[in-house]
Every structure is written in structure tokens, then in C-alpha cells.
Image 1 (spheres, rainbow, N blue to C red):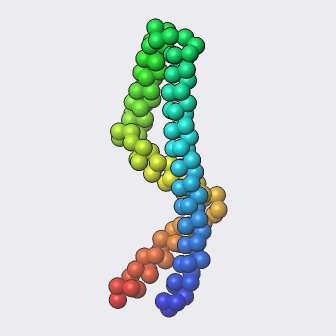
Image 2 (cartoon, helix red, strand yellow):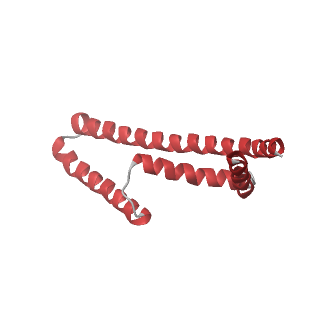
Image 3 (tube, rainbow, N blue to C red):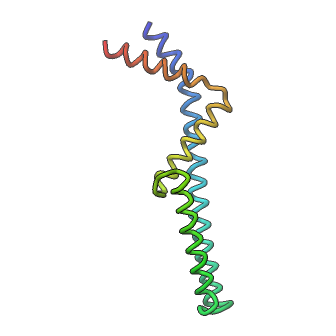
Length: 125
């Protein structure tokens, strides 16, 4: 019946939603960590340029760090066959962490998908 189907789905949906929320938090934490890393790099370069050393010393260093960052993005492109964007990177990480959470918690996602499909069919009638 419809009520039994919805109850069975709700039991699995709680776990699936919790896994998605954990994956989203972890992905956002990594993206925020990347932002902090870039900010720290900028602050370090500014300090080294204007306080400790000089532009003559830091210009080639900053150039090589910039080229290294470009190489990292190129490697990302070669591995993933798509241009780098923070949105895409975040979504890929969320999907990866979500799958890991599903496996770790031994959630039967195939059962969940089958229940969702049956419920959609039932609502169409």
C-alpha cells in the first residue's frame, strides 16, 4: 500500500539525507580550506615582498608559484577531462563523500532508488 511504501522510504531517506548533509559539510570545509590557503599565500607573499625581502627577490618566486598553480589546474583537466571550476569541484567532492558515507553506513541505496521509483509510479496513477 501507499502508506507502507512511504514509511519504508522515509526510514531509508533519513539515512540518505544525513549522508548527503555530511558530504556537503565536508566538501564545503575543503573548499573553505582552499580559500584559506590562497589567502595565506597572498599574505605571505605580501609580507615577504614589503617587509622581509623585496620585489626583486619575490617576483621570480611569485612567478614560479603562479606557474605551479597553473600546472595543477592543467593536471586537474587531464585527470577529470573538464575545466576546473569551484562549483564543479565542490559537486564532485560532495558526490564522492556521499558515496563513501553511503558505503560506510551500509545504506542500501539501490533499495532507496527502487522505492523512490515505485512511489513515483504510484503517484502518477
